[in-house]
Length: 472
Image 1 (cartoon, rainbow, N blue to C red):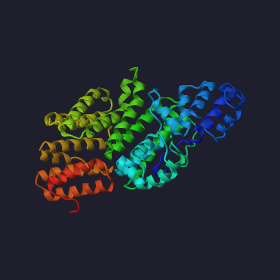
Image 2 (spheres, helix red, strand yellow):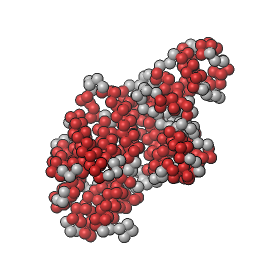
Image 3 (tube, one colour):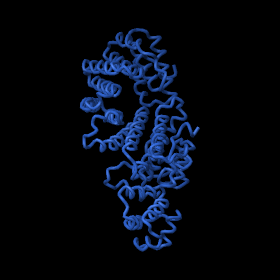
Image 4 (cartoon, rainbow, N blue to C red):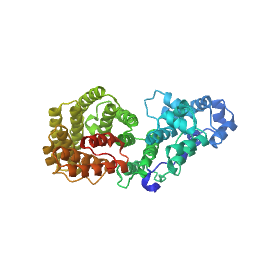
């Protein structure tokens, strides 16, 4: 089961502070005694650090790093190798512009949000203050073993998640989680991690029970890539893959209506990839990165996080304008170009401009249909999106005619449910109430079985429109 669910992860032990200290001392040709004198520390103290029996305080760490004359990247690695809240706070407080490697608090936050509990509700469940749980999630302190197990029980954590939380202190303990990355060649390592990203993102065997473990899978993969990204030998390929991982994670989070987390992950993706294109030399390749997915999820999250109708319309208007500006970077990728156009169309419809929405939708369809090598799924998705727009514009006969041209989606549950909802609404509006109810119940069952929270509001709204109540 672990092999199916979780990514290949680099064995963390070589990146522990003790291992790094030993490596850096040897590379510089220092004996324990020489380094101790340079750092103003005792030889026995350094010996205990290298043996993993003790960890330095922050002043001690700064002294030893200065004595070793480490690079900024090595300093980040040293901080990441110290599994203590003080190191997390130092990393978060740095102005390096880098993204943080995942910490145990990130998984705690994911567990809580996945369970649907607020900070107050989760804190009450384990008998601690709101502020205490917030510090745990931020990595500013770490719960006791008793509190950690109580919290895992209250939030419905899986055994592998409990293991990752209990084994690593402030950082995620990923030893023994999934497969160990055995390849030594950096290119092979990156290729293997890329395959694991595809497995976490798109594997058809995910179900309602195992789907929850994808949080851990994404975080574990981010940890492995973050470690590779900050090594001196790392190239842009690693940063591209890290950005893709953040983007895919944001996409998964958006499917479950975890919009704040989706926004944060999309922002990390954009933050990771943007510096690679700062000089303008590779702008033409921007659409080949994670940028289009991250940008679209960032806009979608900004809209979904607005609570009132007026605020959502304003966010949708700004979102359509932002995506329109970004279209210039996507013409070489018809799939992404069509996806961007389709999202713009949805935001135009949200603002009530159905003429503009339908025109953008037609452009999206033409974009993917004109590519002779594009996969059929892209054509299906764009036509389905256009059918949804036609239904919203009270042109349901045209919507049904368009739906008849696409093959019923057999892949990811979120797409199957979305398609059934479009069929149900269009059929209802054209008077075929029996078939509309059948399609609606099919969508409802898929949403419930797969916990597709991003479709719950839409499903509930359609239930009220066609008079179908839960349980009927």
